[in-house]
Image (tube, one colour):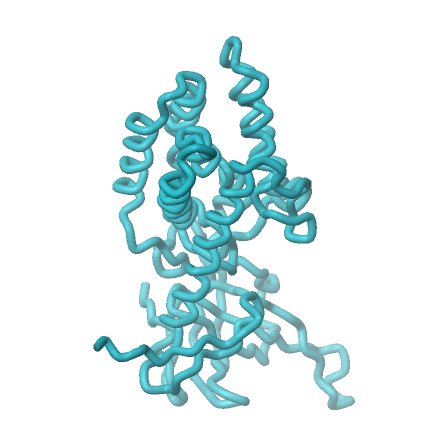
Length: 324
């Protein structure tokens, strides 16, 4: 089946492609003779971007498309406050039979390579036998490792692509390693790295793995990845005889406090030096990824400033300093 990338669509183009429904809302006609009739305003997306669309004739539909559906659309790109696809034909597709790479952004790095790197870190750098056993109990579980390697780190804000969780985790590990080199008398490498590896593991259950747009699962909405992560940690530790209570407490606190502030979703603020270091390593990885995505999103030759980013609450100056 044909696939046109949305970013390539221009006004006047004929459209015959697969797309992901990002939004779908009813619109009502104002003309009295069309009272009770409605049209659909749809936002279509794929890995390249998104575009507005409208379906005037809804009588053809067996059922209204929903957010998250993959659909085949046929129509033409018109103009209404920018490009808009006027849909002539729309039908739902079986998401199991479409190429997920058309709709789901992926990390530039191979997830198998990243997972191997993570396992080497566990084997090489984690000296405490309880911490090593804990980490191996997670990553020797093939299903856990598979989901960890495929999950995003977020829906929209940072590392929001398949493999993003693993990529973000490795970045946090590298930042934590540098912090330990600066404060070797106060930061314990294997404890801090264990917190870095496990801090976001609840995200493998926070997002619906079947969703192409990384929608939240019910557990994700009701419990959240921080609490899910603590549950997962406690479950594994219960299976390890004589796991030191103080070590368990340190790890629990690192997971619960890694967002740094209650208004950012942490049940607790960091109250140990390791939790405080992890929070800042996590934040630096996330924020720099946001900056990079905003910089790379800006087309070349369109000015020295990026568009306004509501998450960073700023525009970013793009002009590079002279190399000399």
